[in-house]
Amino acid sequence: MLLAAEGETCDPGVGAPVRVARNVTRPSGDPCVTAPSADLPYGEVATEVRAPSPADDIAEILVDADSIARKVAELGAAIAADYAGKDPVLVSILKGALPFLADLMRQIPIRLSLDFLEVSSYGSSTESSGVVRILKDLAQPIEERHVLVVEDIVDTGFTLRYVLEHLQNQKPASLRLCTLLDKPARRIVPIEIDHRGFEIPDRFVVGYGLDYGERYRNLPFIGVLKPEVYGRL
Ligand code: IMP
Ligand code: MG
Image (cartoon, rainbow, N blue to C red; front, top):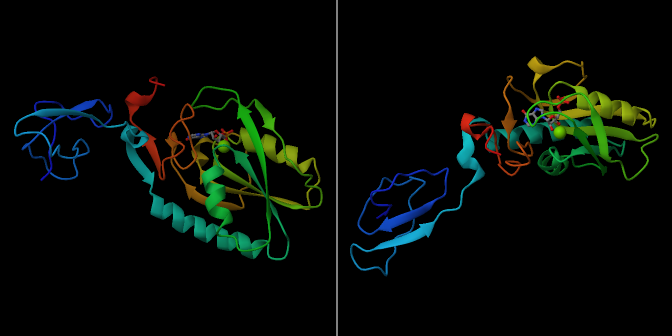
């Protein structure tokens, strides 16, 4: 039998203490339900704390974890075919592309290496401004290497234009782009995408590496935040 707070509102987003009384039933699956306090006498009340989860702030899932995994496997196979015998370097852009890179590279069963760039784009937390700055540059030269940039999302295109120019100046043998998400409705700068995961509508998304105010990167799916979350961070 499942037990839950007696006379309290269930708010799974808050993670506030939940008073638990014995012999109070709730339908299973209710996120506020806590374990029964077996050692309490009948009718007594205990206090337990449920930690807030980033998933509580999600209004809608746009791409679920299974769909991401299937798409990543497809992309990996296509990239492996493109680069067979070429020993490419995957250049990933920190931090958003990190989970995508980690999953993608394990679906590319050819010889390859990794390098990282970290960039910041000035602007608000949901809008990039077009002014890009390199926070961390590549560790190894890419001259004459086949470079595949692995990115989380192409939005206005400002970041990628800057990054692709920066890499092209180092004279790689080839330079291509793989992005998990593409938001074409927001594009200001045209960007050629060689491998694309999902085209998504003009909505601000979080999860699977993507953040709002540095949070939500660890969600295993891609979703949209509840409106009340904006302004709270
Ligand atoms: P762009 O320069 O406008 O193309 O934006 C690129 C960067 O902005 C991405 O690499 C992300 O870090 C961030 N970004 C753009 N759209 C979103 C979004 O919907 N959610 C989270 N981050 C985003
Ligand atoms: Mg990014």
